[in-house]
Length: 360
Image (cartoon, rainbow, N blue to C red; front, top):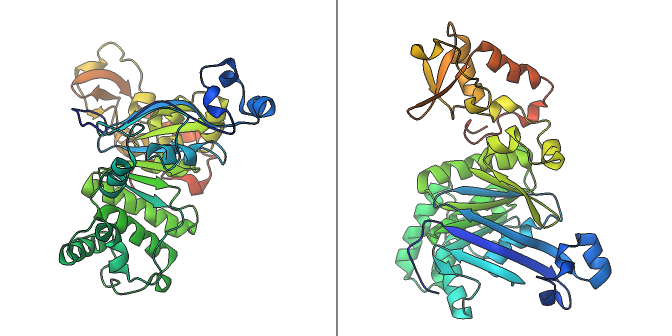
């Protein structure tokens, strides 16, 4: 792998994964355009990931969301070649992954990327502190240094005092915190999560989502997060990639996914999302009327509608909306209430889904 100057933490270019005999001969032929069902009927091969391309910026939380069978878990395994791609390229922090040797891949997995899985994968005979330090031990780091680093990570994830417990003495949420600490201990450039909270109880799951948000604010790591839950995706993601049958349906920020769904599939997903918790003022503002732009209170266009509502409703007259220094529109009581009234039938358990709106 050769390092180079790079502005992206992860770049995926035309990535394919087809399972079955002769899979490598399908890409680039008319058969590649067949639906998943028709391809399997004709060739016996299964299309898992189809011509997927995207980029992840340094420090971004990039969520890949889809239902069971959409290809999302296969995709995350392709990124570190836990599964070999059929075609395409993966570049991580300027390093070519798809052409790397076995030794280079081992180095990548030990030092540059860490994964957190649904099943915690903790070593039952080792204490918490030793589970957290395990990756550093594999790297051959001195015992004193790795235990100091492990203790720092134990403290970071809120497990101070449990260093000498064994995994079976911890709750599911606490075990997943150990998994987070272990992933962070290696100080990776990229953290990858494969549905890590889907087996947890709803309240514990919410706490762990909040923990990921807090940790991201503290350590600023690039994160790729896999989930089947739109609420989780909206809460955690800076951007969301939605998959169906191995293909990309839409990539966008939470407000883009909710405000401008790409098709009926995404629209159905978003139908019960309380839009005021996700949409920003840019989605509800209107052009100014003559004389409106001259004075009055101002807000930025990326303010969440829910957060801005009280201030707007308490203001006499409309509020000016700016995109940084550029005046872009106006918003008033009617604009706010239009969104709030429209979501009255939204289910209460989906409230507070936006990362930008804060932790639930």
